[in-house]
Image (cartoon, rainbow, N blue to C red; front, side):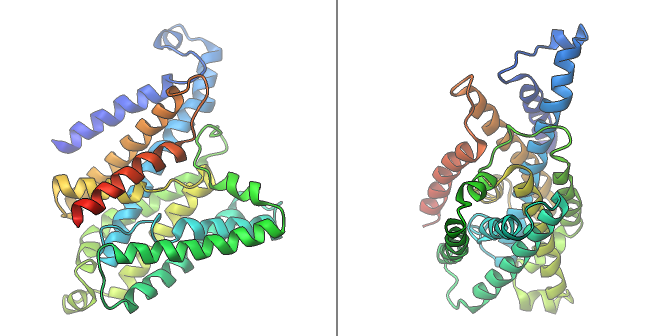
Length: 313
């Protein structure tokens, strides 16, 4: 029942996303077969809505995986240095092979996010007292170090604006033929659902997992692969979207529990709905201009993050 309700809300938000914007498009234009408006919908509005849904699903599911692997509800791509690692991959791309295609850019972002995730997990294992708030703070510091290194070289090479432009979450430039890379997140989402029960066991600890006969290292590597692939695809397509993988899984967990097999579809649907609503709000709040979705998600996400921390304490 909950899944059906969220699916209906997602459909409503998707329809609103198709008709909200600077260009005035109505349902009558579709019925009257207005060629100009139909072209705008197919070239711009449908790709944008599809990218928003995939990014919302992917980043939310990535947050669930990271929280299970670290056994910490406050860990996500935002608080583990994953987004900063993707930025470093883009920086290497801009420095050494700026004329290469999107596939090379995607590979570099994936490589850096995967390695950074491995390093972060290694750091977490060394922490003896894994306080609920301390672990994400370590992740924020780790991400700050990576981001500082990237910024240093960007300043020296005078490409700060280029790197910052890549990292600003914004779907206004999504067009047909320029967003298809985000579909690479779909295999990661499917793998996550198939391995949901195993990720739940991993979240109970390494010793517990091994006692149940689970290959702990293999499951961890699969989880890192899914997270790195999803984050890289989203960053390459639309830029960084902070806090999404943190707040959506926590809110769903508070409302519906921690059975990952049952709540994973709810997390995916909620993430897509949340991102669509933030994007629609960004389009209408200073109409006809547009607020980048990275700004709206950051503001709302930071407030909810603080509420969660205060509530946990």
